[in-house]
Image (cartoon, rainbow over all chains, first blue to last red; front, side, top):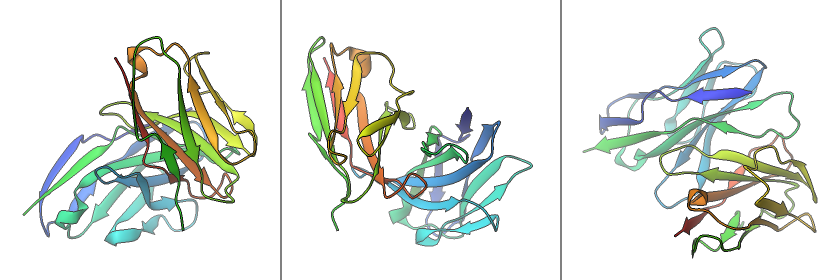
Length: 115
Length: 113
């Protein structure tokens, strides 16, 4: 079984400032890692994912995340945010050995970008 | 192309009633998932279909919940004797294969009065 913790429920930040959204996971097995974004009144959209290889993963809209196995973390970063980045962000994991690849999500972090 | 669609977008029902929620996955996607998102929480896995069969239903909370996918495309989540605690957004996702990216629909917001 896996669990995902997103320590910050809300992150307020000014436009053009950098941001980091934290994600830690717990698992007894090897995992794949994901970040999804949910804009108001829209479905979840994949930002980026880590399956294997380079621990630094680049995604859409200028976001990137780094997998740190020793710290069991997968923090999401963006060097300069825009108003349009205001949304709910979810970190998720899945069991590499589970053929179904079901996702276990964290509780979400609401990013609020202020002008 | 068309994404995952879910109907209805909103459903209000009374405690004890039966409801059906529909999911139309992306054409050709063999894997289909149902998740439930309660207010202020992340989505929680309910059930996963590979083709027509429910490959994993370990997330269904109790036997009031049931889902089908008879022709390997459209899926229906069925909830009997609804309770107020069933109120949530029910999300459907599909992927070409289980290992591929899951694409989510906009969800059905269920409110049980």
